[in-house]
Amino acid sequence: MFPTKGDIDVPIKQLETFFGKSDANTRYNKATRAPEEPMENIEFFFDYTCPYAYLAATQIEGVAERTGRPLKWRPMLLGGVFRALEVPQVLFKTLNPSKARHNFADMHRWAHMWGVPLTMPSDHPRRSVEALRATLALPEEQRPTFIHAVFKAYWVDGRDIAERSILQELLEECGYTEASAGPFEQGVKDALRAETDEAIARGVFGAPATFIGESLFWGQDRLWMVEERLGGSFPHPEPPLPNEGKDTFDFYFDLSSPFAFLAATEVRRFAERHGVQVRWCPIFLGGLFKVLGGPTVPLNTFSPSKRQFIAKDMQRWAKHRDVPLKWPSQFPVMTVKAMRILLSMGNDCGDLALRFFNAYWCDDRDIQSPEVIGEIIQEAGLPAELIEAAGDPQWKTALIDATQQAAEKGIFGVPTFIAGDTLIWGQDRFTFLEMALRGWNDPAVEQTS
Image (tube, rainbow, N blue to C red; front, side, top):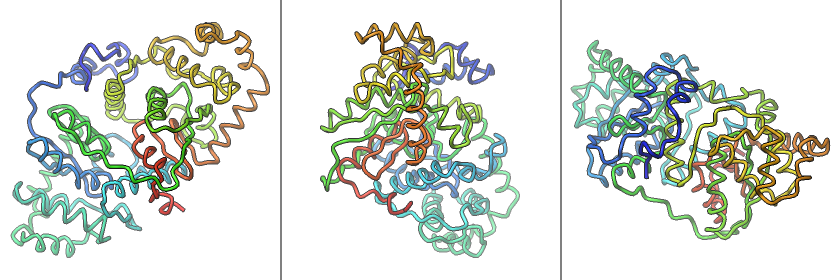
């Protein structure tokens, strides 16, 4: 289920405004490419220093086999991509502590779910340029064995692939003694530079990056989309049997987030499907960012290529969830009045929250306007006096307190789910929420404790 031109409800003018005017039509056409168009092989761009590229590398061959598509491994220098995009070379060091802890937990959850060993080297990131060049020095058909050996050396055995002696050992272990000089020849150096330049030109901003034709899918968590695009079905992990399972989870949200909107459209269906209860937890996202010392609009700090991908990715998710998504004419929006009203309603706020979400993210209504807020309350059949909570000092203070408490729990963005001791961030992490509710022994709890 992927978008066609009729499904994409983001006008070209808005794409130009938010993502830059340059070749906006080309981006629009690529985002709306029909899924039945002829597709070639699967291209997998990676760097050994990325843990998510390692995780994806353990699964990508299965995608190729199940869909009958040839797989082309595309080594690239991630540092070169970052330099070209003018982003920090070591991105995880720029994260606030809460987000850094979550990202560390997230990668261990993926490893655990897929049954893949993963150990973070103490001196990560290590230099990978020689290993990438060595990969390109090999004939294409011989590369997969070496690629897996290098990933294992880095992410399982803790070996320093920057050392030539270790690189030589890995080549010999794979039976490639004739390739020992390859990584240091000028032609191979040029080849890696060309691979990296091509990745940048095609909109790659991180690893892993998987292409089907000109359609980019970023992350190990989009491999199911890759396989679905090719007519297959990525294996969904069977949740463990209940072990002191939980019957309630918290859903932290702010109306200003498109990702929270996408989560809100699914959260009730999810709860009903699994026979659990959801507690709606309104917070003020701008206040949370202020508490954590981060940017007010994180999207604006992303590189143009990352913003372009996210625009397409949101539409893919909207299509998958069978919900309309229209980028609003005003973004960001001040939601504090609406969030105070929702907070004043306690756990009865779910219906009104969905109305606010739909008003903003589907109908482009100004939900910061008292008049529009009043209209939505009236449409919901709720008492008009409810709007008084928007200016009530009690609910002003309560929203500040709720936001501060969220930060103290380790929440750094929305949507965030909490089930027992497990904190999960992202509208694309319902699988982890399901596992947590079923009594999963979350490996991240041990890893981050």
